[in-house]
Image (cartoon, rainbow, N blue to C red; front, side, top):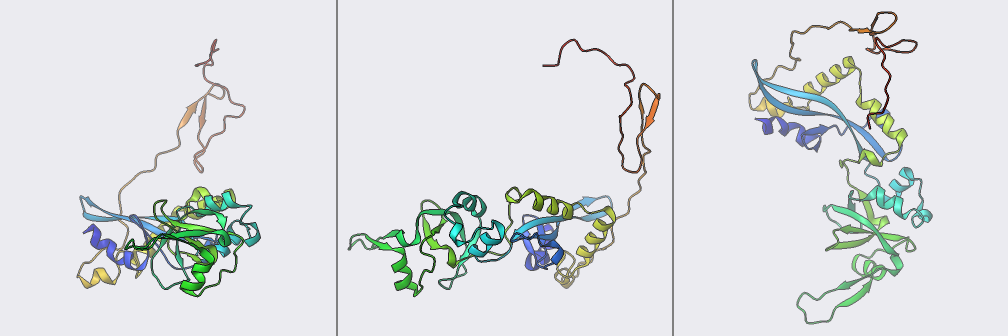
Amino acid sequence: MDLFMQENPSRRRISVGRSFYSLEYRTEDDLKCGVVARRGFHQSLKPTSQGLALCLDYSVLAFPEPLPVLEFLKVHLHAGVDQVKTSRQRINDTLKRLKVTVTHRRTKRKYTIAWLTDEDARDSTFEVVDPEGKNPNEEIRLVQYFKDKWGKDIMYQNIPCLELGTQKKSNKVPLEFCVLVEGQRYPKERLSPEVTDKLKNLSVAKPCDRMKTIEEMVRAEDGPCGPFTRDFGIELDTNMTKVVGRVIGAPELKLGAPPTFRVHGANCQWNLLRKSLLDGKTMSAGPF
């Protein structure tokens, strides 16, 4: 049943584990560095005393835009083509393990970025092995290979290429022929502090806004209660479950003077400025 409820959003949204993120682009969610914040939800089914309940919570993640790699480096690191060599380590840290597609040939295959090559494109070579073993291995220049095999001239021959794949089996592809794959998560630890703060502000919504967003996602056509569910005759109550609760009053703290101090109810904070402890003690030695 859990897999069934994930079927509709998995077809129409970006899937990351048990979470699903919208493909809709919002201007206010653009993080201005080649990375965009996408809103989504995390869902699961749990048995309760009232029956099977759909648990859904609001979530926001960062995703790189499906840009050519050179353009992404320009907007994300402010590194142009002439700065690729001097920014090698930053580029490796930024692109490592991201997925790309290639444009020099027709294929839907996705490749994982390993690192930048040590040599420039014009100096890159690779060894061609005869599968039948009749001819000796031949070393071919990358520039000539792309010209003869794919009819492509490498424009930027004085910068490194990308190593795609693993160390045991990798492919050297010029940066200009690589495009970032859409719908892959971008590690937030690679974002700048300013962008991280903006992403955090989008994630931490006010309770009323969070409730409204969750209700919209539940009722959306690409949500868990979309047409795929209705086609199988399954009905769900799209209203939030009501539970009985109580609000606990703000506690009182015992201090020296005045004798009691009440925590501020609006923001649940307290300020001990100009307050004394109830019974202060002198420490002859530290705890360590």
